[in-house]
Amino acid sequence: MTDPAPETTGKDVLEAVRAERDGLLGFLERLVAVESPSSAPEAQAPIFDLLEESLDAIGYVTYRLDGELTGGHLVAAARGAAGIDIGRIAAAAPVDAAAAATAPIQLLLGHCDTVWPLGTLRRMPVRIDDRSMHGPGVFDMKAGLAQTVYALRALHRLGQEPAVPPLLFVNSDEEIGSPESRRHIESLARCASRVFVMEPALGLEGKLKTGRKGVGQFHVKVIGKAAHAGLDPEAGASAILELSHQVQRLFALNDPALGVSVNVGIIGGGMRVNVVAPEGEAVVDVRVPDQRQAERISAAIHGLQPVTAGVRLEISGAVERQPLERNARNQSLWRKARELAAEMDIALEEGFAGGGSDGNLTSPLAATLDGLGGVGDGAHADHEHIDVERSLERCALLARLLMAEPMFIAGDP
Image (tube, rainbow, N blue to C red; front, side, top):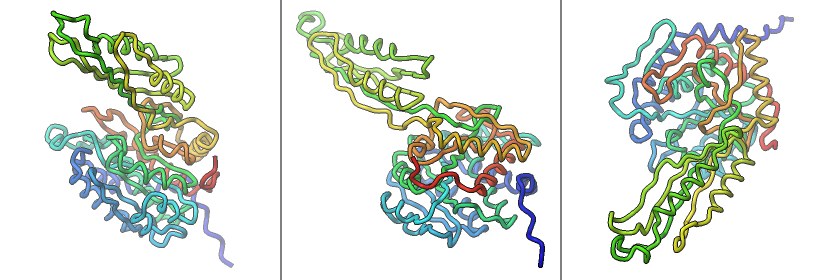
């Protein structure tokens, strides 16, 4: 009898990832060198081409979902993966997409769109040194895409099968709120035992994002009555006067101690300087830490009542991205990540992010862990960069997580 093959340890995986450091950085450099702003749908295809080429080399099949106003999305799974009919997923409506997976999957989420306009590379070129890589989109979140590919590649080289078949979904509209991809993400999350979101880590400490605020947008429109401001002002009802009252009421909803932020970011109204304003509008950004606060703030905004005689309010909007909360299943996934990181002598911390991601969409539906992508700083800023070594460590951590037996089955509450 032959001795059984030795178990692959976390340090084996870390060593395998580090051995491909140059390949990973070269691939990431190619991704960053292709500018892909959300506002340029045609710019997304070259990114998908690079991903397809790398995934094909390790036996993954890819399909593209066309966008209507966006650059579309990429779906990938191992060729012949049990229980995954990726052809149906690529072609089907969202409900059917969930039915196309007849066995549990683990969903890997990422986006290829950036906030940087075409031409940014001319003033902000890719730079690599021994410790860091700089460039537009490198941190948010092309490093996460490269880490995903190379985590799968490490498992392939080590001859390790993930505990549950991974399914990779990359969208091109996350930076604008995932308007077209949301339905697909939610559909896939419903048949996932867990979701790993490859967004960048939080802060220079590289914290995993175990909580994110829910995000909403509301419109408060005031309908008043026009009148001549000099001849007959009393005949009018000023929408701008009313708007001034409502703006103060909206700002009064802020509660930093509870993690609630309400910001009136845009206001407008009026017709002419000598006319009592017949209309006015405020656009409101809302961030909430949990579902309870989401419901409370939504009710408060929709419950606003006019102060000025003769005007009425029309209020629309909602918290559209629910909070990513530290519920029991999400915290179990976090603890597993910390345990596996410790095997590789990597210290992990958890953090709470004020911004939203596609993890907000999956968290109500499946165990979700966010912030597994690059460690660095400068998202959406000129100093955007990653720490190379720490990002390699996160690549190895993802590979170990993919090997771990799932703690939940799809649809667990």
